[in-house]
Every structure is written in C-alpha cells, then in structure tokens.
Length: 492
Image (cartoon, rainbow, N blue to C red; front, side, top):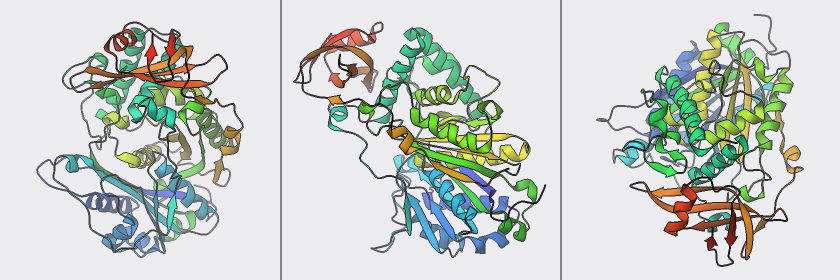
C-alpha cells in the first residue's frame, strides 16, 4: 500500500453480536461493551488503541435512554476519553457520528474514536431487562448530534399517520402506482425482493433471523405474518424486537500506523453526505420520490470520482421495502439485478432492526466485506423518520485519491418545489395514495388517504367506516375521486 496522509480517517476495527440466549438476561450496556471489545480486538492492537480513544460516541437507544451512555461505556472499557457523544433518535445516527468523527480526524482534531450502540428491546419485552445503571443527576454528554424536531404536523396526525409503518405503506402504494403495477403484481415483486434480503441474512452470522422465507411466505397472510398496513405484512417491516450491538473503531492513518494496525485491516471512508427531504410528508412534491437521497448519493459519489455502477457492495437502509425502492430509483440502482444485492446484512427485517443503531451493523459488515475485496467500493445509506432524514457514506480498503469530505446538501433540497397542506375543507379530489392499517387478527382498522387538490395542495384523510375500508382494499383506489368533508369524513 502506498503512503497515506497521516490525517486520513480509517476504520480499523468492527465488532457486532446478537444475544440469542433466551434463558439469560442481558443489558444494552453489557451488549455494547462486548461489541466494543470485539471491535478493539479486531484492530489487532487493542492495548495500543484503547488509551488513544479521545471520543466515545453511543447511538441513542430506546431500551436504555441514558443521559450519557458514552461515559458509562468508557468506564466499563477502562477508557479515558476527552469527550462523549450521543445522538437524537434516527436511523442516520451512526452515519452522523462517522461523518463528524472522520471530519475531525481529517482536520487533525481527533486521533481515535469509538462509535457504538446497542438495543435490548427483546429482553425488555420479555421482562428480562428493566433498565440500565443510573447516572447522577445533571450527567450529560459533551456533544449531541442530529436534529431534535417534531416529525409531524396537524394534518398528518389527524389522518392517523403516526407510526412509520403506516407512512411507508402509503409510500409503497405510491411506488406501485408510479411503476404501473397491479396490487397482485406488486406484492409478488415485494416478495421476490424481500426474499433476497432473507437469503443474505441467512449467511450473516450476526443476523437475528437465520431462516430465509420463500417469497410467497413473505406476502401471504398467516399466523407468523399478520397484516400491518396494506400491502405490508410483518415480514416486510423492521424487526425492533432484538438484542443486538455493534461498534466501530475509527482513527487517523498516522495513529493506526504508530499502533501497528496491519494495513489489511484498514478501510477508508471516502466521502459522506446528508440532507433532509421537506420535513413534513405533506409538503413533498411526490410521495414515491426522495430528492434528498438523490442529492446525498450523488455528492458522495462525485467526490469519490465514482459512478453508482462501480459500487460493488451496497447496504440501502431497509426499514420497509418502499425505502429501498425509492433509494434504488434515486441512486440509479437496478433492484431487479439479483447479482447485485442491496444489502450486506440482510436488512432490518431479517438481520435485525436495533432502533437507531442498524447502520453501525451495516458499517461493521461492510468493513469486513471490503477487507476481503480490497479493490471494491461500498455504499451505505441511512434513513430517519418518514423517509425524512438521509445520509450516505462511500468506503473502500483502497486508499482514497482525495481527502475525506462531508457534504451538507440541505440548501439544494430546500430549493425544490413543495406543496401546501390543506385541512378542514369540503372538496372532491383524486386519491394520490393510501393504506389501510390493521388491528390484531388481521382486522381492517383505519384507512389513510392522501389526495391532491386541483390547485396542487395536498390533503390527508382517514376513515374507519367498514364499507369504505372494503372499497380501499378491493382493487386499486389510486386515481379514484373521493369527497373530503371539513369534519374529516370521506365518501368514495
């Protein structure tokens, strides 16, 4: 390997685990400690690098929302960082931490950092874990990354579009309409796509589910695969009920060289980028598109001097199938090409969806994959809220031609057209997209609609009327005219 600028950021360690012992209790901190130790051992220079860790960052966790988890992790590891970092809840959080740390390494402000995260949602749900170690009042991290902004406005909430699965199911039907598919044809496609994710997970030793369901089993409704929000069944949704952890060690090339980390363990972040789509779902021009992920992907690839077809190792954020399909379209990836899988882990359904920390697992998997293919290129994306937040990173084991760069693409996205959101009016308008959410037992519960008014404004509506729910589930209501009333009722 040729000489590398000593301020070049490099990933030198990656560790992860899935806690599958149902007879033993665990905690997020214990999981995180083990993943971090694995990442440090993976460097082959644990004793040299542990004292060098000046930043310890922990992804915000649902099962242990400690005020300063990095401080607790440092104490368990015997580290003495000069700062601790955490994030707001978002699927982009690991990339946010990687972007920040890599930029500071490049600028000579940081020698080595640990990025970690864990969830014990399964143990919590099973009653085997009830909390983590308390921290003194007033404890807080040195740095908090990300955006803490309320994700919904009144019209979206009034239509019951609260849970991510409901919104992503609406995006899914918009994707189907744009593709010109019937409901049956689109379900068949979703089964094929998600079955490929399952096959990747089957070969992932850290995946939560080690079975690979057949495509038909993914789209059929059965006891293990209830309807959630049409067209989604359980096996098309992120699996939050896991006990998992992952960690990464990032340092400067100079620090890695001085510590004696073998060169074959180095993986370089080439470039990162981030942006949000228009913050509220109702403001977006199209619900089957994402200008932000397009801008983010292009910026990162452009700096690396690469085209999307040169990316051999992909991990597209896969909370739901619509997220993968929209990212694929925006980035120019042919998802029907079964020789080029869009995941290196198996995705959030099968590999596991540990809250905001999934991407740490994806980055760990990419690190090991790229070591095995030193001339290959990897791309990892993250998504937050309702296809709202986006981030991406390009990586390779080949040293970069240019210094690491991080791009904020928000100003580019903010210039794009947006829609006004209308509430409380009597109007007739066509259905843009929809979904029906289900209660336990596969009982249709609420129909959620997005309609485009003649002047371009968007209106949301909801109904629980059984006859209307039946009409929404029978055939294809997209494009059909609906009467929206000021009191929130609808009539097909």
